Amino acid sequence: ITVAVNPTSTGWLLWAAIVPLLGVYALSRTKYHRWAAALSILILSLIPYLTIAIVVLESRSDLIFLSLAWLSVPILLTSLFFSIRSTAIYAALVNLSVLLTLAVIPAVDLTAVNTALGLILTVSILIIILMEHRERIEHISQATLAESEARYRRLADNALDIIYRYNDTPQDRL
Image 1 (spheres, rainbow, N blue to C red):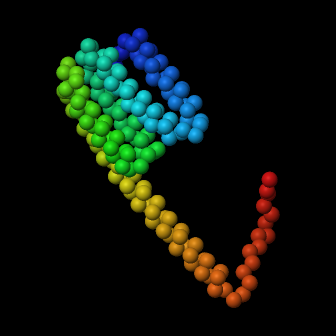
Image 2: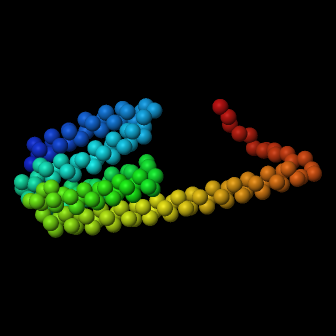
């Protein structure tokens, strides 16, 4: 895919995204780090729509596809910072917004939007399945750890002899 973009409009778009992201970064260093994560995801979600609004007059299907495909990144970031439910709701809203792109901007290329929708839908489903799998594995490992702790606690509580732990190699401590 060859992409040629008007450098002036792209530069303004990048500055329009970088300045708020710097503010969000400063916010993330405070106790409001969850709000900062949500705001950064919102800003990253707006970038494709701003790009489409700028390039829609050029009717470039490759730019429209790449812009909409970018929406996979905020979905992935949502899965890192928020719960499965929040990620599923956000992914559904993103997919719905891609569908609404056709209604709001009738000049947009149908093939580019449908291809991007297929990609975003596939990525959304995979992310949610992997999040569920990760949660299931975490639950299993927590249960195994609790069982092991209980077993050793019973061993220590029921021991008739003295249990002593000695480490013959010196440990460097601060």
